Length: 80
Length: 409
Image (cartoon, rainbow over all chains, first blue to last red; front, side, top):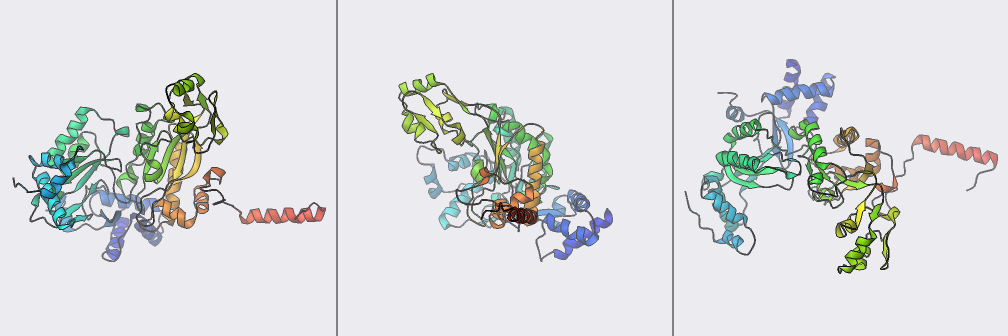
């Protein structure tokens, strides 16, 4: 699971500043890259969002998945 | 607390109607945020500029919806509304609350927010207007500890919404309250974790009166209907006529399918032509009532104009039984999402994708058979489904008929 989560994180990092990733983009991209079931990627992604490693953002009525900023993590009490 | 001079928005307090400005001022007497919101609004009116930034990274940990970030460009001038986020709370089915539940919601909101609410937003949720980023987790913790949950926003299944249904209405054809609750529970992930291309709304009306306007405002409208005839009490029809109702003008002439006749003696309905619009039933409540099997019609695709123009929902399933555990309906919803997910570009609602790809492709995708009730307009959309197998069978039959001399062009 940890390895998969690292891959998902790397996938999001590569898109940072270039493309707003929807959850579907991550499921398709990572499952194709690692030849995994989308459901497995979904479970891993869900865990990452639950602990604040990734987060949802919102703009123009549509949502995307992003790597949280330090400010956000501080706000949520996840880093000092 | 700073007192703002508000000549422009004061105009909105004039006249016999309730005024949101009056309510904001009332809230502003005890709340800095509401007070600054009043000053901010006046400034917007003076300069004709909105000053609001919408969206961004703001929310509750683990949730992708339910909080809509709003920031003002005038944070220095109006510090109370520098952050003014909206919090959506999942409403109860049919909007039934006890007064103590409402008091609980408002007490928490007074503690952490502006005290201003929108009961209810057009999406259905209970909308709390104006709080700061650092209060969000506390607000969520307080509400959830008392059994409330956040509603939805963004590219998610928006909080399902329904009419009062059997709670107060004799016309409902299925239990809208129970279905609304069941779908809300079933699709918690889709509500709280935005996974779609754009928003998806489900609204449930118990009959064609459509009190939640699902036909115009929901991607999926579940509208109650019945399969049988309309029962007529001829004595009550006569009473309506005796009491001054012009039955020809008010009922017969207004029937959209012209299936009613009344010549002063007997009130007749050609049920085969009736479209179950509810007009006659709602006007002559004592004389007419639906009979027979109850269920719902499922329509798809309505929306307000954003990417393309506004759309009304389109019938895809003319009649479906709506009974717990609603397995057939839940499966259909999942198939619809799957097709939409495979075909939509970002920010495309399902109605728009159907417009572009065609109803034929959609019906094939969700495994529904084409039927006459799906035709939107006469002489349009015949949904001819000729597969390669159909063509091969047709050609084989034609060749056979030619061989036996039965072939007619």
